[in-house]
Image (cartoon, rainbow, N blue to C red; front, side, top):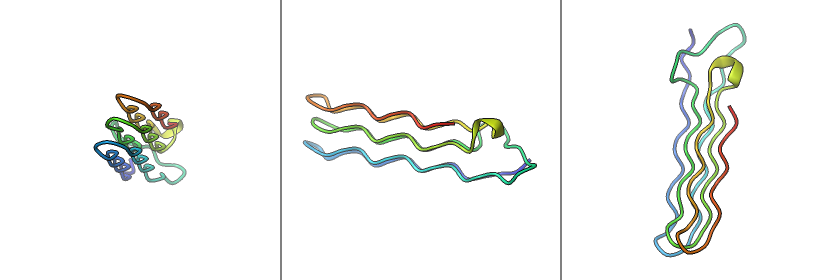
Length: 88
């Protein structure tokens, strides 16, 4: 097993307007190692408040390593698109 970092979560958008930050990518895993469960997860995208787009989720460590992508942040309540989920 090889322990790797989990990506940080993106910051929230401003109270009235502003996009959520993107989630950080998980650390990579060297060839020949596998990640334990719950490891190698991309950070979640930050959500917008009233106006703005949600941040994108960060990439996981790779599906072959058991990684999962982070969840995209929600769009603003009045206007905005949700962020995309990150790849595994």
